[in-house]
Image 1 (cartoon, rainbow, N blue to C red):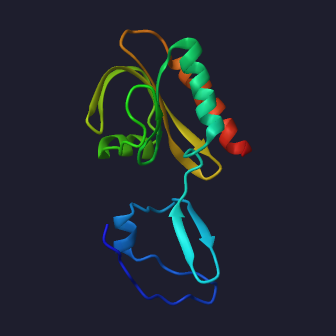
Image 2: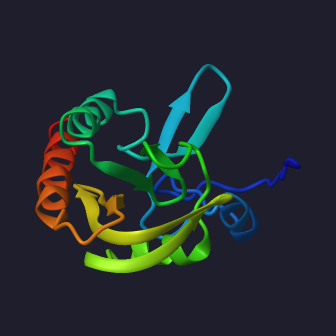
Image 3: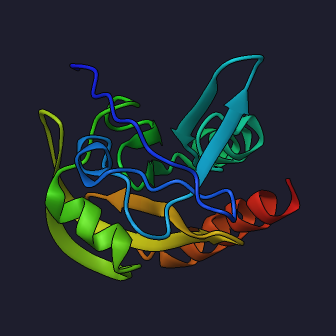
Length: 167
């Protein structure tokens, strides 16, 4: 990724505008949350997701995978955070990003999604993950047969949201 440099003034309220080119390049949208880190001479802005690197959320999902053999995909707004179906870290295509942005819900819906190079076709149950900052991603429970996993999806999404709002 090529560096982009801009010189900007800070207004009287301490605000600075992040140029459109930078926002497009980093996929920063209205309503996104940024983490601000600083040291003696440098300020660093990074997109923030309460889902990413949240070990308690991953532990909760692992318990359901181990004990109920659920097939789970946890998504941030941009990538796969956790899954026992597709690799974590896979970037999302525009179709899935739009579903997350719109807080889409699927209840035992036959569908096919592509996660990187992996096509996953089957019965989907999908619910948004929302915390104090808004939509953070989605949780998908997938099955190959018409088993009603929507209740598990509801329970797991509520547990994840509870954890995000506590931490």
